[in-house]
Structure formats: C-alpha cells, structure tokens
Length: 144
Length: 144
DNA sequence: TTCCTTGCTAGAGCGCACTCTAAGTCAAGT
DNA sequence: ACTTGACTTAGAGTGCGCTCTAGCAAGGAA
Image 1: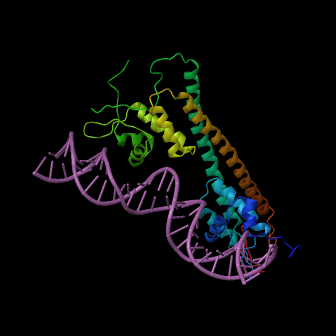
Image 2 (image 1 turned 90 degrees about the vertical axis):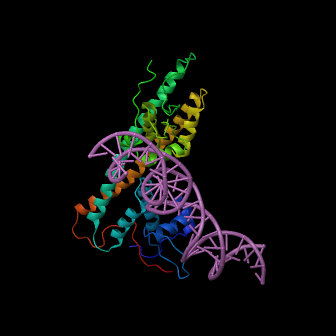
C-alpha cells in the first residue's frame, strides 16, 4: 500500500488542472463541499482524491445540482458511517432529474428548430411578399 | 382576412395559460421582450400572437438564452425592416450552443452514472470489506 | 534587502432572473 | 355604498453562484 509519497498540488495547480478558479475552490471548501488538508503554514495541499472530488463536483454542478445538495452528498461521504445507499439514492434522484431536464430541453430545442425552418422557408420563397407571415414577438396598438 | 374579432386575454389568463406568472410577464415586457397592447385604462390585452411570443420566449429561456439576447431578437423583429436573415442567424447560433450544451451535460451525466454503477457494484459484493473503495469527496488530516 | 509570486482570510460586490411590496385604479356584484 | 378581485406602477428584495478586494504572510530570486 502507498501511504506516503503521494503527489500533492497547490490550489493554483488544481485551478490550472481543473479549470476551477482558486477563488471558487476556496468557496467550495467554505460551502462544505470539500475538506482539503493543510500545511503547517495554512496552505492547502490537494491530494489526488481531492482533485477527483473537484472533478466530480463539476459533473454535479454542470448538470444543475445546487451547491446545497452537493453539500448533503459530501456530508454523507464524510459522516464516517456507511451511507452508500443514501448517497446512491441521492445520485439516482439527480440522474432522473437530469434525464427529465434533458428531454425537456430537447423539446424546447425542437420548438426553436421549427422556427428556424420557418425562417428558411420564408426566405427561400422570398418574392417580396408584402407583410410576410404572422410573426410572434411583434406588436401593435390596440388601445380599445 | 380577420382584422377585428380576435379573442384577447388578460394578463391573468395568460399567466394561467402559459405557466408564467403575471409578475414575470410584466417583467418581460419591461425588459423589452414583449410589447402588449393596452386598453384605454392601461390594462394589457394579449392577442394570440402575444401568447405565442410568450411561449417562444419560454423555448429560448429554458434552453438558456439570456434575457438580453432574447431582447436583441425581439428588437430585430420589431425593427420593421426585414431582419429575417439576422434573426435566423441568431437562432441558429443559439441552437448550436444548445446542442453543444446538451452534449456536454450528457458527458457529465455519464460521469454520474459511472459513479452510481460504482456504488451498485460496491454494495452488491457487500461482505463488510473494511475501508471499502477509495472515495473522492472524503478528507483527512495531512498537515505537512 | 527588496521584489515578486503565491498563498491566506473575512467579507463585500455582482449579475442574473425573477419575485414581491406598497399604494393605487377600476368595474362588477350585492 | 361598499366590498371584492383583477389589474396598474415603481422600485425593493431574494437566492444563487460565484467573483473580487483588502490586507497580510511566507518563500525564493536578484
């Protein structure tokens, strides 16, 4: 087993490696998402596992999990007890949310694509047809 | 051609119909996303096309287009001139962004799914194996 | 020794998209 | 006449996730 001799990184190196700013890394820590070992002088030293954690947080964040939920997950991990079941449940719940979200976004995207096709059609048969088609987002005065 | 006799809706009815609150509808209007006709007494009356516009704004918003970009689009629509080409370009640009985003989210989702599978595997062969696997998001003291 | 870089903390500030409040108008119903 | 409810405005407040600032410390190079 390797106990010592683990390569550790400074906050700057982690920022560089992960694309997360040092500010944000400290913020994540203060928010309870991360606990990073320190040198005697107070400087952070990130182990491999800490960097992995930052990357995993990235997966969660970029799929829309709020900080507080990530914190709940992190708390479970750190609780010492075997909370695997709960953690898995939490992740599965999130996965369901994300899948639903993706489907929803896809629907909205379809609506946009339809509009683009409408434009393309309208522009193809462009023979300077008066007031063209009906176009939402337009406006006029009605004023009773 | 139907000129008059168009059914119009109050803000409350539109809120009901679209799921967008009346507050937000007014906010969208103040932000320049919408121009809604008024009665003599100042009350809004939404035409079919205005409701369509609200719905289309929904497509844009829920795929992450910022208000200011929707405003740009709305300004093009309202400019009177034929800005179809620009509007289409704007929407196509957005579509590309969304497609890229969706792919990225899918990748992050894969990372999460992998983790869930890891949990499932670890829990399947649960024979009380000491310190289990290496788990990111954990922490310890190192302190130089 | 004097820089320069990198790190530290507490806490303020920011951008976004709402969301709500206060104070008022108006029309219909009892 | 009064109440109710839906509407109006300007502007304040909220929640989120950063993002930045000020002021300081430590370590290495010139």
